[in-house]
Length: 256
Image (cartoon, rainbow, N blue to C red):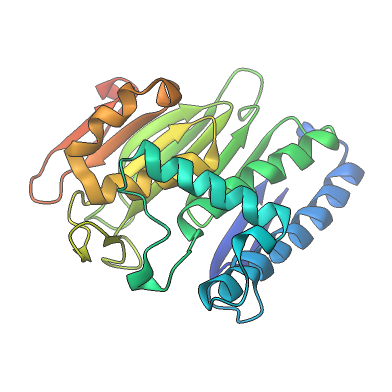
């Protein structure tokens, strides 16, 4: 089963292999998941004036008075900021204040995977605008094989990673151009041309991919922290025709 839902200014794609679960449960799950992504959009969008995040940005709502879910994401963003030594900073006043966009899509995709498990769905591929949450593999023998887009060659795959259960987030200038801001230099981020991060938590993988766009090679020591022992990255240097990686599959899985 495939379904694409336009939301969050992008497309959220659902792929559930036909043999993964009873199709009646799949339909019920999909209905719930679609409602959920729109609910998250209404709550966290910086473009919807009525969202709680927009109210926080305008100073009309304090985080202590915000709904529990918003407070949870705020705390998760603080943790991601600390783990990346400030390279991921969704609290930049220069950009209007609290903006969890670099965290919440990956987090929401993980929540949808938990919903799927409640319906007995054991295999699932969610693509939330480039943030992937994956469960169960393509079948019992094969993991999901995920291709990483080449940052300069449209339609070309630069790297491949097999994932059975986990998340993968990528960031770069593929579609939106240079759009990530470096709070420390007050300029557009120039640390990397493209980044991909995998790990068990989709929200944190999303934040790390964004942070590596800012920090580039200076972000490598983050992955020595115990909290990031299960995460790995693949990074394309901005000013060189070269890449570097940490805990990424063997080179034979990569293509030039």
